[in-house]
Image (tube, rainbow, N blue to C red; front, side):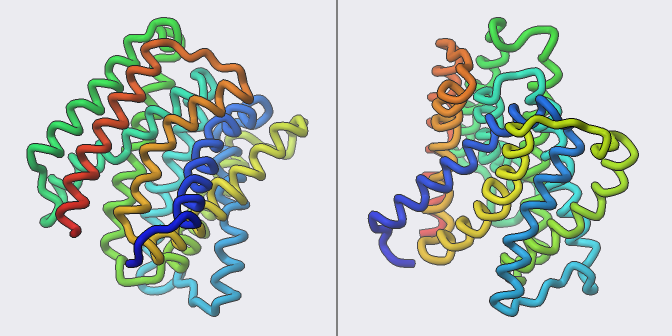
Length: 295
């Protein structure tokens, strides 16, 4: 891997901005669409640029190969369930809270990787990072101004959604020998297959009369925050490696708060700031330990 330059850091910042922007766009999408429909449209539109790239680069898409069950399982666990839980939760909580809660993914990954992998065992720095990061999350849940009896479950579902991302990531180890573009296209195809009948049965989106803003947001979520963002992530991984790409986790909660304030005028309380700082510090300790191991 080469030393990162200005362009690399610019692309990393763009990736963080795109992923951070997903949260306030989910909020806008919920004004007109149900959570199942949002998950379906996000995955459907996200599949378009990824499949197009595979066709352009002549990469075989193995969605229906002998490993179809792995693609199906990852599509369900890594896309369908978390996309639904996040959209459902964001209906009742601010989008900036969702950004903070989702930023806890590296912390959850540290715990689950210790339990289910052989080469990602926990150490002192990881324990310290997890304790600091999750203390910030617990502190955030004590913010009665933003999280109360009416939306506590919604916030909790977002946190659970982040855990499903991690579980899906662990499952990809089973097919880690395949090209990233192929894996992404295949799991998007299976996620779409799962959601077509569920969406039709539960929400009947053809009966909706959505606003233009909500429709633009849900298309953006698919094409840019899902499809394009994954392709940009592949580019960064290929050029600069996992350790450099993982730094995006530091920026997502920060940008999520800023974008939520700019576009939705969302409230930023002192406890939100403390929680973000704790999560970022926690991620720092976890990533620092992983970086030394990879090096």
